[in-house]
Length: 495
Image: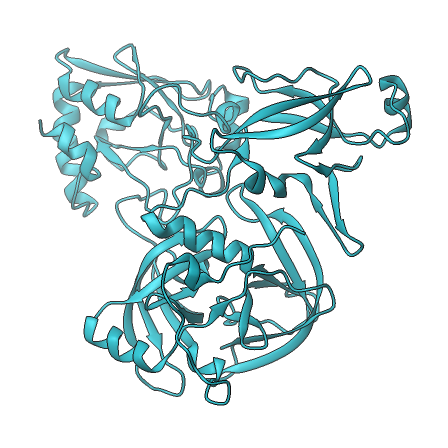
């Protein structure tokens, strides 16, 4: 079984604190976290949602830091850490986050408090091995319903490679320990060592909780060391199907011993040595069965993409054995973890915007599809959903939509807004990004400015240029909008 066989403190090139077993209590390293969440307001991107108070759990790790879940501290205006058996609440800040894997690292803000706190709250050691199916674990945290630390016990009932957030995937443990709101971010222990981090439970099922295993935790901590989370490598956009159907196997001429996945094609523009109907037999030396699983032990089977991280070479390729026309052959497929998507996730940031007259323009991000219901756009002619998985063709490329309805002003007389239309052009010039649109508006010299859209239901908007600029000032004041746009757009506007 592939395992990470080094401790976290070795990865970080520092020595663990030596503590005698009879003096050590893991509860001394568990903290309660209080955060004030201020979510993004996608229809009014110059502001934020009303504050909401949340609490969760964290634990001390090497380097005078605290590990927790991303969802405990994301988009928070303030974060406090409460040490165990203390009424103190110490200010903290996020120094690393992956909402994709639901992990975050925070650090106390004041140097004096940081030094004093960590002097008496040692880091927990993160164990690199996976626990065994059926192994007993303890979850420690601060669930709702009390102020003291809580310990629940259960067994590991399942280990699987599955989806997380934001199209990410990784290992996940299922345990039957009782996990409730507030447990999020707390450690799961075998003995005194961390084997995972609590990140969710199933509200409608008793004693079913999910844990991020230590292997994924160590990968995150290592990845974030340079200040940016890149994520694990993945293959380019290839399509596969299972090879379980008897008629399909007979048509492909496969013997009973020949198993794997059927390659059905790559996204347009991606070069690959694969041909349609090739069978992916092995990834590295791991056999792939007809459902796309790899058997590691009698108790553990994992989906084949789990091994991409382990097998990616320095040149960014992954070795495969394929079957083509009944013959076995070796190929290498490209992997990458730096896909520059045309429609990325906002993550822990907030939406950018630029107001011109009654219109609020914003670059499209994945979250807009859920917050502003952009899915209808493909029906109305918007190209957004057709390119959601595409990488940028050139630096800065992005789609732009109008966020919400018109801001009230007489200049919109006779015009209507159809949903959140996708901007196509300004004065006949097709835009490349919101920055490009800002430049076109800034440099316009004609008496009128034309805004055309991809969406068939959205009428073309034409405004008198001088009236549009005058209306902008009135609208900003009337709606108490302090800034006309995000910093990078205002830098362009004021050139």
